[in-house]
Length: 236
Length: 314
Picture 1 (cartoon, rainbow over the protein chains, first blue to last red):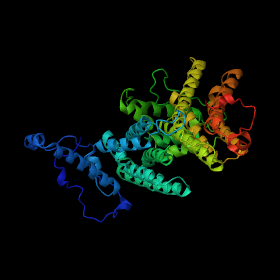
Picture 2 (picture 1 turned 180 degrees about the vertical axis):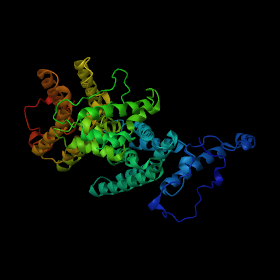
Picture 3 (picture 1 turned 90 degrees about the horizontal axis):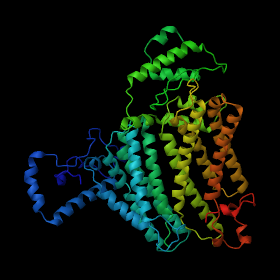
Picture 4 (picture 1 turned 60 degrees about the vertical axis):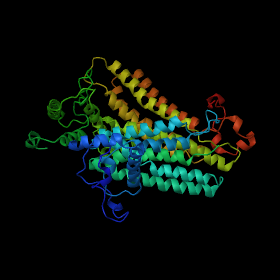
């Protein structure tokens, strides 16, 4: 997992501004490092910390990782000038989100082969291979972002759609009907827009300006397909 | 153009401007395939002789110099593939526009690609088409169920897989076959080399773009309108392909040219028909109510009632 050891005191992200203040110009600053950091950056403190992470309780270890994931969730939900997702990338969040989404979207095992929604594996493959393809595309177009940073951003920005899936399942408990469908449609559209805005905020800056649309369009297609799967989900 | 102008160092855009004005001027492509030593399209007498000889020499000199300056990376390096994504948004939009409006004089490869094929267009147009096919097929089912609640609706996800595989196979294997065939016919005649493999893929990829709005318009459940849109889109797409292939093929014997062009058009038509029949078809008979009710659903009825039922997915 890629995390700076001194994560509790994250200096680069605490900007004392109200929420949504910079939503109109949510871009990342230009001086971010391109590559994320997978190891502890400050070498001189390794020996001090090594024994402490070995001896700490399992609870501490897990909570540290969970807090990092949770912090990134917050950054996705409230996009503002920050480069936490890029600097300290990790793939735990995307994995958790993808597995949750696939578990909720998978078809009833009683369904026949031709009918029904996607299998668990199909959702998984679509999410991960879609993210890999978009990352490759963005790098081939000359983007200035590393492979895992891009995967991290795309994975974390599925969070709004996972929330939409949860809401849709709850709404479906109330029984089918046109009102039901309109509510679900509205929720999915809003979350889809949120996902796109969040991921574009992080990814668009890394592309040369005359190719930005070329790099953003596959992201749009990716989230559109996931939104479609969420919208057409029918519990059998 | 003044002669002094020609002698100063030009950016590559100048060369492409020259190429637009004289679409038959010679140029060497940046092809990395070891077997084709760049293809040189000579200004064969199509009536556009703008003093072609001087510009031919200029172009080949400039292009040769540029080629020497650029290292040709091996196919195992990342930079090799990056050279196929060297397009801007405006260029991609331009190429799409060019494929939507084919004109007899404008060869897609020379005029729009300018011998710089890209892989972005074909790949993402195929992806979009595959997903749009699956989504609109599903939507037709939803709309049909609205009108007749007895139809059993299900999100048929397997159609996404089928759409993806079939579109990608078509867009990559057919150009491969076409390219192979053209190279075999050309043999040792390097002067009129056929298009490189990537250019063929590009032509096919961009020609599939017109199917995307066609598929979306197929949501309208009026059969004759669906067939009209289909015919229109097929016409545009096939016309683009034929106009692009014609300069290469007209040097061959008449029989071969006719057979090749008609095969290309036929395959394209088969793709369109296959999409229409598979993705916009009614459910298997056991799910549909008795025929007199089924007759009220216009999307389910193909126009020609003699179509064999064996075409239905089992």
